[in-house]
Length: 278
Ligand SMILES: C[S@@+](CC[C@H](N)C(=O)[O-])C[C@H]1O[C@@H](n2cnc3c(N)ncnc32)[C@H](O)[C@@H]1O
Image (cartoon, rainbow, N blue to C red; front, side):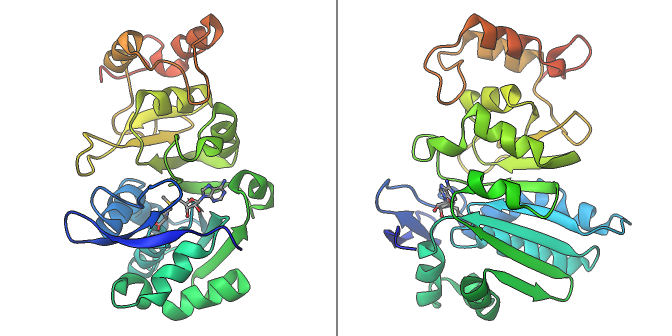
């Protein structure tokens, strides 16, 4: 695919991960790949419960930024433990470099080495079919790929690089496009906890909640189409902090306009009785 410039890096806690040399960004820098994938994209999305639900349809999970496949493999391993609904996993990625890198160093990346056959099939054919699993890689730019999804998604594992390194995927317009492919009651989980990310998600039409704590971050972020699946929806206290914040505008917008400010304040999440005190 010809874009790659990735290298292996050892994190402070001894875990091995991947760094993009062009931006200096490291994948899963906080807890390391295994724990972060499990916490943010399996536990926080309540994936096991969704797989156990007595539904005749497959559970659709959208993996935004396949990278070295840590999140995708954590999702697949959860589905194999639960043995419930079939899993239709779609990964979006424009660069096969991270995956090729981790497969070339099996002793440093045992999680990927344990699924070598699966990952090599995905690299070769962009599609894996196994009992209970259909895994598709839609190659190229993530936004361009969205119209090719096989249907609305139950879970979105939103793991691009940071808004600074990856601005195209963090704008209001981009996140609104992800919002449109989410089923009612679906959930998007992401590591970013910044005020700007949360404002962007609100303006993109999501309801937004605090997620679990990951490493140095006090919490992470989850978003949905309403309050039902959010354990800790942002409420009056967050809105107060946002009013005082020096970073009130969404990603990609330098200064908050009165229209955008009004749109945040009028979000149903903050209507009287609608929000939590958090
Ligand atoms: C933080 S890494 C993902 C780590 C991965 N989820 C894992 O579990 O190993 C972000 C990934 O997003 C990809 N990416 C960035 N912008 C993209 C875009 N516009 N379309 C598709 N992929 C993109 C990068 O190539 C990179 O592999």
